[in-house]
Length: 256
Image (cartoon, rainbow, N blue to C red; front, side, top):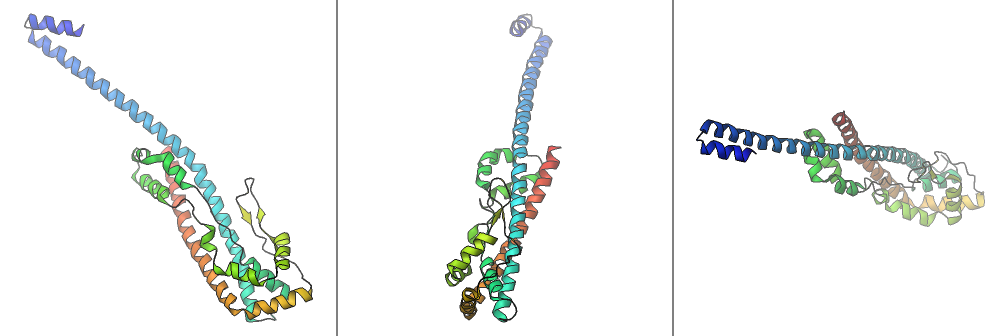
């Protein structure tokens, strides 16, 4: 219809009407393009918001896991300090307590999180669609972090292997049975280590084992390195947790 009108106006040399019809056509095209762009932007925003909403519980779960790791490390550190006391003064703690502390200090737990999956899910395009620059940066940093926040290997120092070569297997088995890791979540990914372990081994078993352990001053040095390594890992984890909390706050503010 508009084409016939323009043709008629040209034949009639009604240039004003031609110009007016042309403006109407151009205006309609521009409006159509703008509406299409608005719809695309709205769709992108909806997709981005949906992805951010999915990330929130994952980051929250990572925080819970990290907090459990901190508690676990605090427990092993306390056992480690008791073990060091047993190495420095054989009368400070009993033989059984010394063996238990030396073993429990070697217990480790890692914090795991498959960030790589989220990096594929979110993608660079969704990040670019986020209007908040701070949230863009926090999310990019989070997705660029290693897939495992804290690996078991980060705290698996030589002490763990070496001390278990010395402590009799019978004693290790009893400690694991009575005072080993305890699952505290349904999925079994979070553990706690009992802060106390009251086992009184027979003197004929505990005394020679404690004597051999005390004679291994290299294990005392290994334990000091082990505790220092765990403390360094905790510092890195705190940095990670602080960044994740900022990310959660930024996501929640963006979705409001």
